[in-house]
Amino acid sequence: MKIAVLSGKGGTGKTTVSASLAAVLPSCQYIDCDVEEPNGAIFLTPELTKSQSVKVLVPEADMSKCNTCGRCANACQFNAIAVVKDKVLVFPEICHHCGACIIACPNDAIKEVERVIGVIEANVDDTFLQGKLNVGEPISIPILVELKKRIKKDTTVIIDCSPGASCTVVQSIEGCDYCVLVTEPTPFGLHDLRIAVELVRKMGLPFGVVLNKASDNNRVIHEFCEKEGIELLMEIPFSQDIAQSYSRGILPVQNNNSWKEKFEELHHRIERGAGK
Ligand code: SF4
Ligand code: SF4
Image 1 (cartoon, helix red, strand yellow):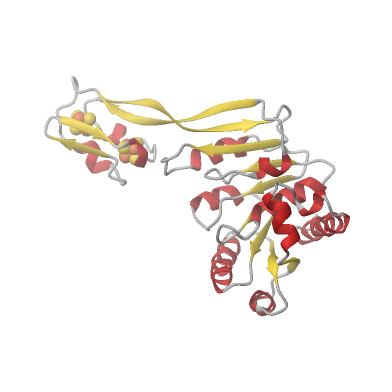
Image 2: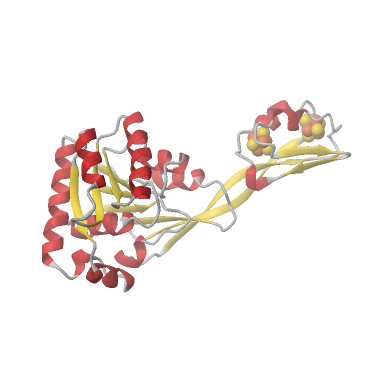
């Protein structure tokens, strides 16, 4: 079963939930798809012995064949290639590697060259994988594609997604059996939860909500879930102890048996929700 853990915004406790779930399962594969800030390894402390660069292909013009006709630039939907005087300029950071400029060139003047955008790291048996996008790179999809190629079929897979509801999240949750939406009881939390709910509903994926930093004084998430018929899977109270442990890289399940049992129950609820 593939379980995606996502949140409409950063800082809601998404990694606490995904890493805690991984920590209570007897065996699983954990994939950190939060490629701009992967921090599941801080809590799960895998020994990352494998590393592989992720490369994309970007166009490069051979000016000995080019007649500066401009068809390549006209074909590009992303303004990633421009013809200026007697030069063809490529802006690799915004290139989407679609190959349209190559097809459009009448003189076979464009070839593709490799460009490294990040890395995939893993432990020896691939039960822990993480992607890292190089600083300044805007497009992370190729790293997610590479990570998802390594999904194991014979175990529970936990996917820690990027925050938000962008195309990187769509790529991460596609094909998952269940989505856990982590949120907090604030107006921003509710706003971003609505967006995340809309996304998973559009994709037809079963889902439930984990409420982090829950407090008796604020019921906005409870009311929203009740009105929308969404299962509230678990509540994690606003707690100084949990925050202090987190700041030291310790998950609630690692020093507290009652939290271990609660996350085991969360896993059972997810299984039920996914019809497994
Ligand atoms: S490969 Fe696609 S996105 Fe990149 S420069 Fe060519 S047309 Fe533009
Ligand atoms: S389409 Fe080909 S020939 Fe025309 S400007 Fe681009 S690279 Fe040069």
